[in-house]
Image (cartoon, rainbow, N blue to C red; front, side):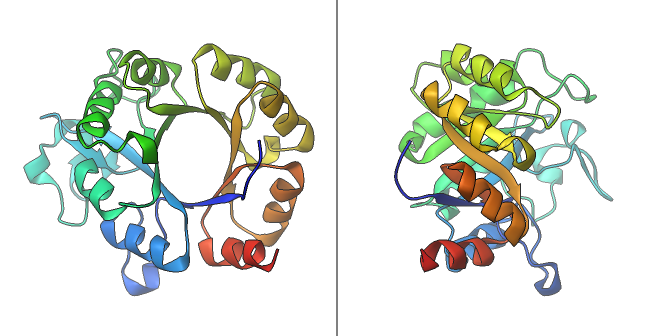
Length: 234
C-alpha cells in the first residue's frame, strides 16, 4: 500500500472537560476541527430497528439498547444517518457491534444488513468502510452486493497471519490490527495479501512511532492533534 497515512478519530474526538461525549455529533465535529481524515464509530440496533451510534450495549441510567426504542434515546445519542451527515466529506469507519458474547446477539446480522442499506441509500459508499470483530457482520455487508468496503477487526490475542487469511476469505479491503499486532511483519503479511492496514488504538507518541515504522495505512487514535502534528512534520 502507498500514499499518506490517514487519521481516524476513535469514537470521534470527545472532550469530557467540555462536556463532549464519545460517539456524538459534537465529537465528530471536533474530530474534523482537529484535522482528522475520518472517524471511527460504533453502531447497534434498538428494539424498533434504529441504527444507533453507541459503543456499549447499555446506556448508563437509561437501559440496554436492544430493549430501547429510538424515542427512548437521550438527545446526545445520534442515529447513524445523523452521524453520516455530520461527517460528510470524511471517511466513516462504521464498526458493527454484534457478538455472540452479548445478550443482544443477533445471528441474522440485521444490523449489518441495515447499515449496508442505509449507506447505499445515502450514496455514501465511497466514504465508508464497515468493520467488525464478528465475521458474520462483515459477510453480511459483502453479500449485500453494494460494494461497500469492509475491514476485519482483530483481537490482540490473534495470529496476524490467520487474521489476514480470514479477511481475504471475507473479501475485505482492510484488516484492522491492534497496535500490538501492527508490527512490520504483521503489516507486510497484510500488504502482501492486498489488504490495507488500520492500527487501533494509538494513544501516545510511542505507539504512533511503532505503527508508523511498521507502515500502516490508517491510524485510529484517541489523540488526533498529536497524530496530526507528527504527520504534518513529515
